[in-house]
Length: 273
Image 1 (cartoon, one colour):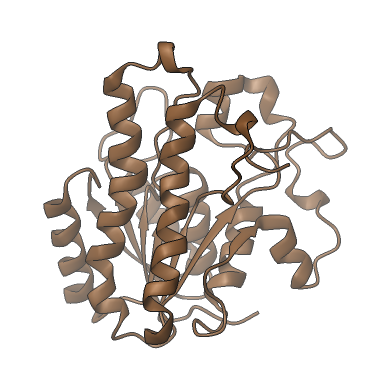
Image 2 (spheres, helix red, strand yellow):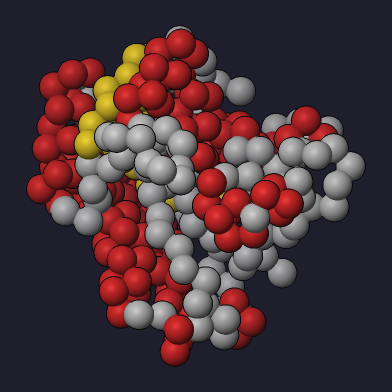
């Protein structure tokens, strides 16, 4: 695998979960990590803040810039990108990880929840990518990576949680469009999605503590993201990657180290047949 030493990564929602795991993996290379998230004070139910994540990044060997950013507001994103470039001298990678979820049917989804998912998942991803692109276009081997699924139009992925599916697929459509739009300019735009459920605070809220035993840790997503982000941006774009397939291509054959409970049956993730 390549190395992210000296690279600057702008990661949304990196105060916990998959975003933080990606940050820590890059930090071990000596990367500069911008933790762009909206948790500055401890949450009663969710672990971590931008400051605790920054401490972990530094302890892992990277440089950290914790920034309070709500990606629903483009002016906050623009200021965060400005501070990123001012602090680290440029920007190499944008990871659109922040996301809102509500697995509810049409009649059970309040419009407030609908608006939240679309303003964070779709609009936030578009706005963050848009704000980062002018500096990414100046970078060597620039990447945008969206944590979103392959586009699968099977009705089963819509009927139970239409609003959420539309919001996540909006992130994937950003990959489809931006990869083509910026291919000739050398900016890679790809998606990454887990084959199995990942043990995060969101997963625990959805399935309870027992469900976590049927998950993999966020480290598998972090290792897969690292593999993608170190590839040649001109040769690797427009892909909808699945974590396990990425790592198999890198030579990994034993995935037991990623299991929360070794030997347990793993829960498959959504959107994958």
